[in-house]
Amino acid sequence: MNARLERNLRLLAVIIVVGTIAGLGVNFAQGRASYSSMAVGTAYGLMLCIVIGGVELFVLDGAICNSRPRAATDSRARRWHRRGRY
Image 1: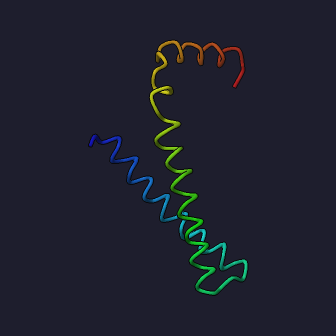
Image 2: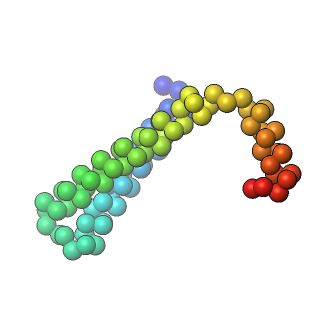
């Protein structure tokens, strides 16, 4: 594995843990304190975070985003900045 993949996997693990805890907390805040409700809230938080975090980290930051020439993007940004468009 390269360093970028390791960093993305660590970040995905943090997103999964935080999302699972958030799913449990939202369920508890809604007054659903039974064990089955907590399990459902934890499962929903886990599934949502795996899907959304995986898409954000691995799909949206893939080959299409990295294939643009850097010089063209930077010069275009400089032109927009000079014209006052942010």
